[in-house]
Length: 289
Image (cartoon, rainbow, N blue to C red; front, side):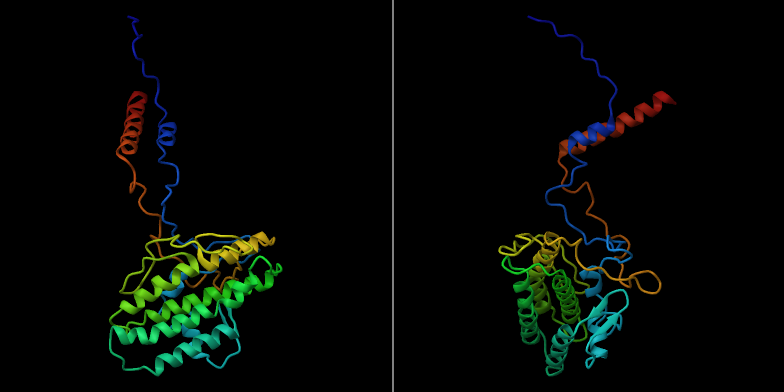
């Protein structure tokens, strides 16, 4: 019977140990938290604020999409610092939502809240048709149109989020919650919204959409499809926005909008290997001390 040599443990490299455990790799079901606005690749421009930050501003905030349109319903276009120009089509669409709301003042809760929200939801989804046609495989590459479409869909989604989160009007909340969980997957792939406000998504990549478009299929809704189309046609990505006079966007992601805790989803083996790495670092420090 062969005699095995004594087992000798060499120095432990905690970094290599962590890598081999898989802890440094991005988990398959990692939640994609909206990116913090930062300088982009388009000169001095910045990324648009996240849908969820902008969509959770009060409906009467003049620096928000819905608030600015409410105060300027007769304008042909509206410029919002840090957001950019809201076009005639979006203004007209949102003005119709406001008119719908005003015709139902004094509503009750529950089902009658849905009587307001569902027609508005249908108007929003119908408004995407020209942009969907513009990004189909047979359509020509037109970056100006794609950029305009991206901003239109983004502004409409922000206004809709603000619209359904007006707590002084919608008190039951079931219709508002259902509306965001119905419409937002098709906008950016997000879902898992829960009443009360502020409502933010708890899940992403909730649908597959984009078959037949220039950018192809994906899990980030129509905004993702337009983004992929822009890049497939030689663009650098979605339209940016010039910073406000202070140099900052008005709707930055709040502090603490960080990825989910890394420990969530780790197996017992991963945790054991991490513990060994910490122990090795401690022993190494004692030997050198």
